Image (cartoon, rainbow, N blue to C red; front, side, top):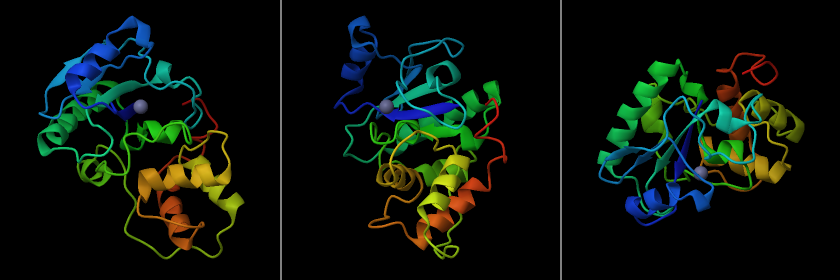
Length: 210
Ligand SMILES: [Zn+2]
């Protein structure tokens, strides 16, 4: 899979220094600057330390199963067009080389709910989805009957959100990825969004070897 991050730093140069410093205990395969400049720091076949503790689908050691891309962003600013163009180009190549389907391009917040929020609510997943580089729900807001927390958790697990967290944390993680405008208690809109997403995953995706 591919995991997208933001650096939470004000410059790509500082992020690069940090990611290349052994003392930081973090690394990633790529860094995409705000101007679209791409720096490769780890070979794609090698393991980088970008995901940390977490889980997605059947994968509990995400670093061993993923390519990490750090996007230079301070966590509050929009992502410039040049940066998104470069990211799309990079993603298309990685997905082709490793046969990664769009539903396996995820955010750090998807695998580490409650611990990580990057790439954050400003990241344009919809843009990636239009080019087949990620997924985005169909625009439906009417949900199935009921807003049952157990049913929500079931759908979330089918969509890859298998980390062991409480309901509020899970809801926040799902909204951050697929419905960043969502607020308040679990709603029919959340259920509709998630059932649309879950339907794109093979039935056994959360259980079998991924
Ligand atoms: Zn991250």
